[in-house]
Image 1 (cartoon, rainbow, N blue to C red):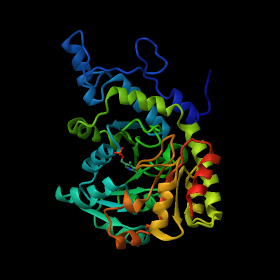
Image 2 (cartoon, rainbow, N blue to C red; image 1 turned 90 degrees about the horizontal axis):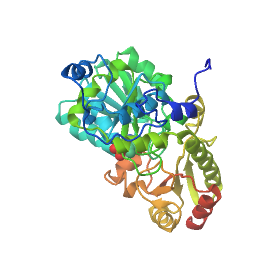
Image 3 (cartoon, protein in one colour; image 1 turned 60 degrees about the horizontal axis):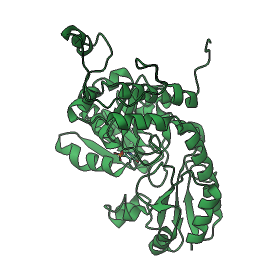
Image 4 (cartoon, rainbow, N blue to C red; image 1 turned 180 degrees about the vertical axis):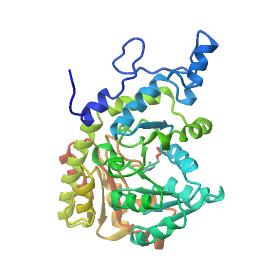
Length: 390
Ligand SMILES: *Cc1c(COP(=O)(O)O)cnc(C)c1O
């Protein structure tokens, strides 16, 4: 059958790899092997010298389970290439080591590990880093003019769901010859396509929505051949390849990505609307609410508003702690994106290391609770919140 229209995202997440094994398995099985055998040294050289795409050694990523997964992942954001890693942080680290040496500007809040790399560890290697808040975006052009080579951002951010205009930031960065990398973990490829908006590289913690079941730790980079090719050697020599079994499990998770995310979007929207009317709630942070500051931008650059939302509980830190401890379905755990709903109080977890003043500067109240909405019945989740809130 001649296919005129490019396949949709759900179809690509299921049929996204052309790389087939010798047995015609519809889904790539787990190749639990560290190495592959050859008939002759000439055959090995064909792979080593790049004349033939083939399996060679698993830590290099040259393993069918990893080939198939990477082809599917690249298809999810129409990227030329995707590289998979043993964690989201492994992906971020390889990206920064490959492309960060001219300086990295981070806009807004970022994941704790990313922040630690940028504020503490990378400067020790001689990589200049600049952390600016969303309210300081006017500094972007002068930092770019001073030579920074990469702009890094998350949108929406954790935990206040602040949104940044990817297309606008990409235009400003490109005008100075810098590249833009977007951590798309919170949105997932279903809700946001940063490469289509002008970003150059996309990062995912596949531990979250791509894995989706809280049983896989992995990471991904997506982008052009030109930008991803030099990342390959860093990944190889840092040894940050996932095990083939992890790759297969992640590929399996991708087949339900679209249907999971659509349900999580719908459930989070309903919960946000109920929370916005609740007398025990001071404020709701959710891009799908019409009065949320990022709503208009979300409508422009996102295809869905996501499964993450935060609330500020009336009564301050103690009231929020009591609420978090009283929830029965929402489990208290860091992480997000799985089928089970989770809650965190950022001042006790992800943002515990910041001073109260720094949290306040970032708009993170001690009464803030962050929810990752899972796939339980929405009514049950709402009832759980209602019994736990003041
Ligand atoms: C969890 C997370 C990471 C780090 O991913 P790991 O798989 O835990 O290494 C990076 N960015 C964001 C936005 C995350 O939520």
